Image 1 (cartoon, rainbow, N blue to C red):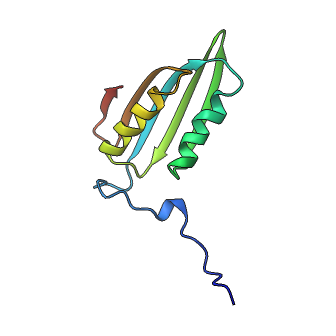
Image 2: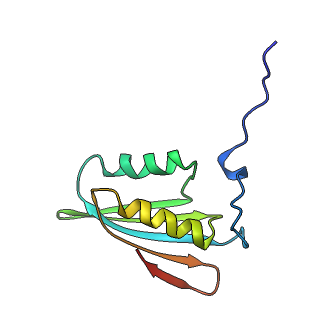
Length: 108
């Protein structure tokens, strides 16, 4: 009989560099206003098994302004993710801040 034990959820994956699991990271992105941008962004998160806590998108003429909030990321992993977001062809600008009472802002 096959094993029916469920796989652990993405939220149970521990980030080895995370010293504050309750901290979250907020990303602000400016991208091309194209139909496939959200699929590309969410596809990247799916590959990393990361689920955003909040997502907001607004179209302003030829740009999309996107806000994302993720919890449980270390500063190291947040920076790596910012670089991966910036490497997408459709992304023009990525800024992020670590929200843990002492705001640290980085621009990637």
